[in-house]
Length: 115
Length: 110
Image (cartoon, rainbow over all chains, first blue to last red; front, side, top):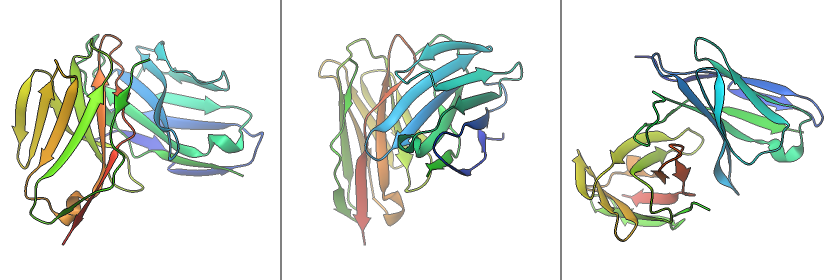
């Protein structure tokens, strides 16, 4: 069974630009969560989408947004990029039932560098 | 504020030894606990899930959970250099979004 895929794998942008990242979950998984990982802050939760609805949201500014399509694929957008947005952006998919037993499986990540 | 605490390490063990990784969590409502392995430059890979008190074994890995002490551990038997990585502990409760620790760096030296 194919795993979680993320595109692009690497991205270089300049301050003020915007970026869109894409994630395709494991087939049959309906929940997609996005995380930002930096050496200083570790893994930080951005938001979670389930059935095209944002179900949970982390503590990030409104410049970070996302959406989910009917096929469960998800996109994440960051507008007005700042140097501090340089990070590894990870997508994780899970079955998505309302249960803490849901296991999350991560994609390979998108490495974003903001110059 | 839900927190998951891990010693950042590095934890250095010789090849063939048992590596013991520990994690504590603050939310008593946490019901599920996960261990992920993350190699440098790669994404986290789920290696163990544990939901009830006691031990759960999978190959060379044993996860241990003590809810009364709010403590989770991961034992790696017969450690190999390929086990050298950062190990992330995560706890999930009512919100079903796991809270991750910052990870423990493990170095297995030949």
